[in-house]
Image 1 (spheres, rainbow, N blue to C red):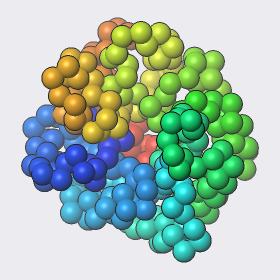
Image 2: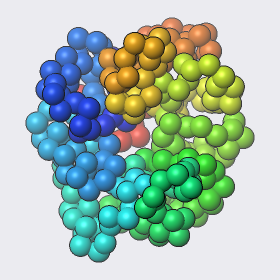
Image 3: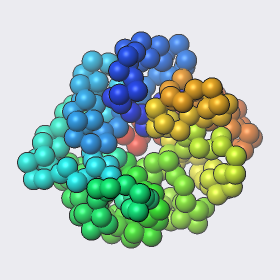
Image 4: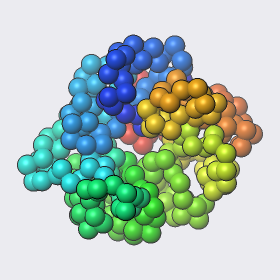
Length: 265
């Protein structure tokens, strides 16, 4: 079975058929998913999904693009949400320096860093791992993650990994995990290919980031991604590592349960 460790089924892209999509995942060899909070409403909706579906777990957190909504009252609500029974991590949190000259109202670096640190501290307070978003912010993310690793952060996955093999090795040396999804199937992914070719497979997590980052060949026909398409990512990993789909599924299944602290029963 496949464990999709990073989904956004609370997204409006699923408003018309969310139940149908989720209830159909088992037929596509998807056994469990983790729905990821990216803002306050998404975190609330994630908790609701974990209550409704036995195979859905969740995280709560505020994406760097959305931290402008945070204040102390909302942060206290985030703390309460993080204590819900099937919330297994804080995320997705981090830094995103893409588009400062494009997106009006995007939080500045100082604001992103402040709330990134606050959410890392919340994870440490609650003894939870974190799901990290990092875009065009490699060094600042690394510096902060090293700092909190040394402070005793429980664990982390670098979601939708996009940096170099050397940077990946630094994260792996800290005991962190690497999230691999549909981007691996795109043309020109030389850096990511090198990472997947060389990384220890006991630190690999499969993810979709759905409804985003639909893998090839589905991408040419459908914009909306689904956990049902993770088999294309598995096939690409098999091609790069020379092992079977069953081995990748088993390894990543075990990795996901271990990282999130979920019982495999």
